[in-house]
Amino acid sequence: MNKVLIIVGDATETVDTLYPYFRLQEEGFEPVVAAPEKRVYQMVLHEVKPGWTITKEWEGYTIQADVAFAEINPADYVGIFFSGGRAPEYIRDDKDLIRITKYFFENNKPIASVCHGVEIPARAGCVQGRRMATVPKCQFDLEVCGGTFVNEPCVVDGNLISGRTYHDHGYYVKEWIKLLVEEREKRVATV
Image (cartoon, rainbow, N blue to C red; front, side):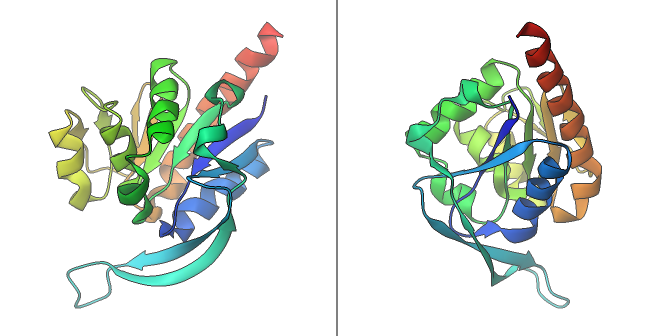
């Protein structure tokens, strides 16, 4: 069992999505792109340009969703990743995504989140009492749902690993990969 969900939608941040996607492959996992529908999604690039006070957005690459949220049995997956960008704001109310998210939290499976990805577990009611990194502009989303904002490149809170932005991938993704390897080994030992 090597499959890991990567949650996306239109306006998912390109680097937030592709860095963990390829790291999973390097570690022998099968990244499975999941979205509201099985179709091609437009990713974006986000950056605060010098002199700007808000994030500027450009079109990035596209990505094909392998599976729709409604088709997912979360027990078939070792872990889950919540990518950043604007997508989480638009997909967080999807009832199947909420179901999937709750499964990973309730079953203590490896979870990673970056940037706006926090909006999904926050909406699913899963951040109460949890410590997380996120982009500072999402601090409110986390705290209003009972979580604690930590402004660091990597926050490990049990099975939940998080980073602030794509600048932190080198810090938090490796910690998430360690948890995925441990989970994979547990599954192999029980077979």
